[in-house]
Image (cartoon, rainbow, N blue to C red; front, side, top):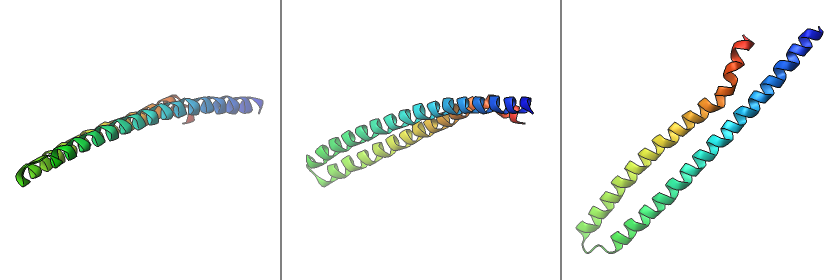
Length: 109
């Protein structure tokens, strides 16, 4: 009975340590995602401001439509690239958060 309690206590401590490592990975990954999202927002705002300046200085309707079309295309491409990048960061976050538990899972079986 004492051995069982000691084993249970050992596994409980190991699980708690693993949980803390996983939480550290989650925090690091969430910070990277927030930083990336903040940078994208800043770049997007700057690109929108530049497009507005160009739009207000357009001399004709055709030029204004061309500026708007170019901005829409660039914005879409930037969004898709950023969504892919953030998706990759989330996938990496999940891998890193699970990594500490990889050694425990076989022991639980």
